[in-house]
Every structure is written in C-alpha cells, then in structure tokens.
Length: 99
Image 1 (tube, rainbow, N blue to C red):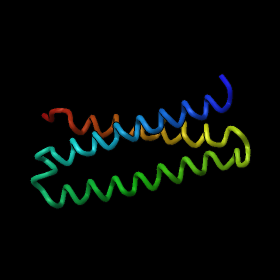
Image 2 (cartoon, rainbow, N blue to C red):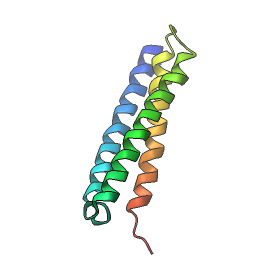
Image 3 (cartoon, rainbow, N blue to C red):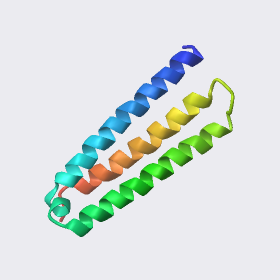
C-alpha cells in the first residue's frame, strides 16, 4: 500500500468515526435523561465542545512532529480516528441501561 493510499484510508476511517460520533451524540440528546433536563443537556453539549477542541488539538500536535512529511496526514487522521472511536465507546456506555 502506498503512502497516499494509507493517508486516504486513515482519512476515511476518521470520517467514519466522526459520523458515528454525531449519531451517538444525537442518541444521547434524544435520551430522556438528557432531553428532559436542560442543565444536563447544556453540560453534555459543553463537554462535547471541549472534547472536540481537545481531539483536534491533539491530532494536530501529534501530526506536527511529521511536519512537511508524507506521513503527516496519516498521523493526524489516525490520531483523530483513534480518539473519536474511544469517545464513541465512552458515550455508548452512557447509553447502556443503568441500575
């Protein structure tokens, strides 16, 4: 697999996990524990906004060590995908029945 193909594959994976994150966020916002409580909804939205900023900054930081190289896009997308997958799994746990 060429570097270009690896870069494209990691970009596709990042897009996939971003799509999954948006779907999971929508599920949480529709969950009655969140949708019926304005404070909980606001806190979730604030947490997601802060988390997205962290994810984007972390991916940029990790990729920066490869600045100008052909691996820079791969590292950025791979970090982005990995962090997003982890967050989706964390949020999916929130949706599991409690008690």
